Length: 210
Image (cartoon, rainbow, N blue to C red; front, side, top):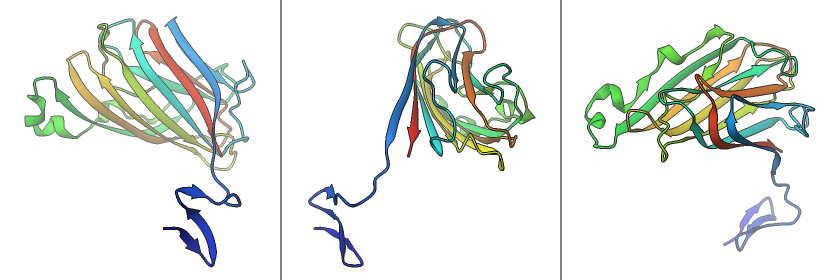
């Protein structure tokens, strides 16, 4: 069955009509961690595009494995091409978790919990993207971040982040962050790190969204 709008066939037999505009997700840059203290995406450096070319950018942090146990995976942003990562951010965060033996799911505060300690109230420090991670061989986290119109110079810059991880307490944990970079200057760099030690292994991919 086709999808027709105002007499025009938009979708038929599972395929879009050739005349229908579609979005595109373009891979811009891939970073690979190797005991890295930080990993940075800076516009204009090493073929990174992070400007008004795209209205929205997605960053996927895949199988991030910390060098140390009991550390946070975190990010910060820059408006001066990475010279400083100290821009004010206003954020909210919450989590849901379950122990490997299922015990945490019995406690209300482990089902869905607002994480005041990880919020930033116009703070310039790093934004935590996870709860404390484990560094055993099988433990890692993966994070998806979307930042909207970072090159805009009229409004603040909104962003969302969702992560899933093995915590150092052997929990499966989902974690959400939402907020905005509280500046009308263009954001042109993002940096990732662990709260202590290095990012042992992992991959970070930057995409532009049409």
